Length: 186
Image (cartoon, rainbow, N blue to C red; front, side, top):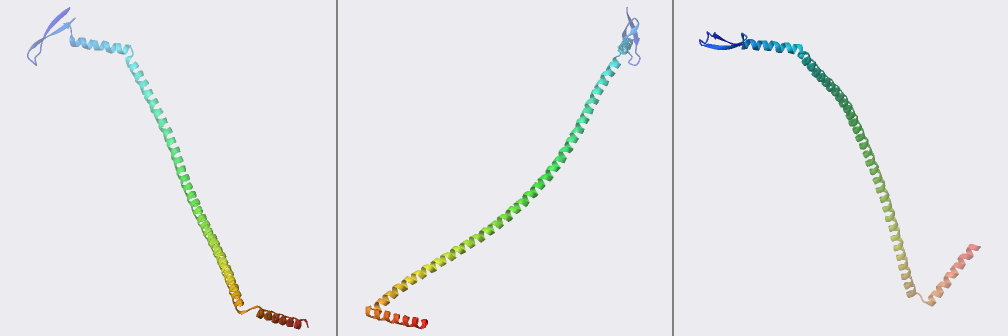
């Protein structure tokens, strides 16, 4: 079964022995095996299975890409919604700030007006208190002056008049009044 074939190789100059089975060399056997393997692969439809597997993977990848595309579109839509909401929030915040500034200005103006009115009321009240204090002081001084004048008059009268002089002065005053009354009656 096994035949040995002697082949000389001229390029290297040395002969070598190559084994052959049924007169077929190892290279031919490898070629035949490859042809049989390729035939079996084609007969079992391995390329179709590989193609189907690749098509399935391609379909999965397309599905993932479509899903990623949809997710990206959705994310873009959400981003644009949030950008518009952010723009609205910024506008609203600006409006709130302006309203707060206007309210603060009104409160400050009202506080100034209230402070001015309070100062005016306090000045008026202080002026009234000063006037009342002046009147009280004047009345007190007048009362004190009157008391002093009365005391001085009493002392002077007591010093300058006695009973006899007072009786004559009273009689003279009565006579003067009687005369004055009598003239006015006629």
